[in-house]
Length: 158
Image (cartoon, rainbow, N blue to C red):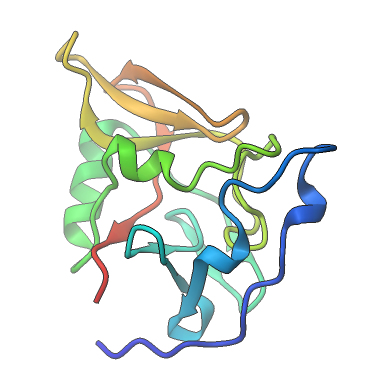
């Protein structure tokens, strides 16, 4: 698939709390595929801008984010050709540390709910748990795999 770049993404610095600097500035992302996907230049990873269940509308995301248990989320990602669930370090790489509710660059990932998003990383201390990122405050934690959480997919750069 050929990726087509579109206009630059506006800065999200106005969303930062006083005296804090963006950790994931808009300039680190290149929009692709009519804006539906962004490439995170520091990592080379390509992210869907909308959580699964939501659709890109040229300026934001419509619909409701899907919530799935961990095994369902992994299966969903496997069914999306070329896409996968991010590991915990990849998911941490898009956390925006200068704000919260949601703790993500809202110019890059608009309409992201401030919920928990699954990673593909199981928790080594307990086989019934997996790592997630809470996008209300940007912290990661492990949760029971049977809990329903939100999913955002990633792929290696094309």
